[in-house]
Amino acid sequence: MKEYLLLFRNLSGENNYILTPQDMAEDMPAWQSWIGNIAMQGKLISTQPIEYEGKIVSNQGINQCPDKTESNLLVAGYLICKADDLTEVEGWSKNCPILKYPHGSVEIRPIIPFPNN
Image 1: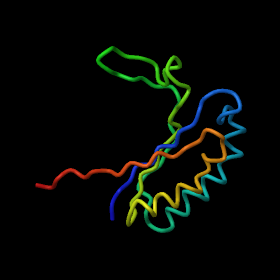
Image 2: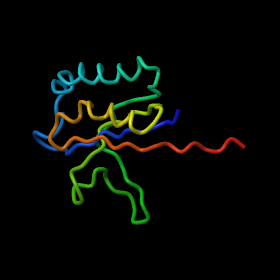
Image 3: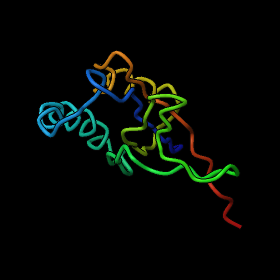
Image 4: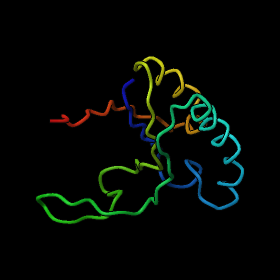
């Protein structure tokens, strides 16, 4: 089995994503069910929501994340899972709760293991 990183993306701002604890409480059952399905198959490795604010370090310096001058796109959380192939992960992702939002998306990245020598 191969490991995959899923990044949950959405636009920040009013009417685009969760803004209040009440919004989060209303969305939690859908997330618990979706993640629980992956976990029940023994394929969940790790998942967490992440804070919207952060830092981006580059050769140009340190900037706030997300940089509102470039985009309102933010990463809201992640999930690391294992699956037989990318098609399986794509199937799970089609039912991800982030997709209820007009600009929600799931980015899927295969994880490359370090060599064991």
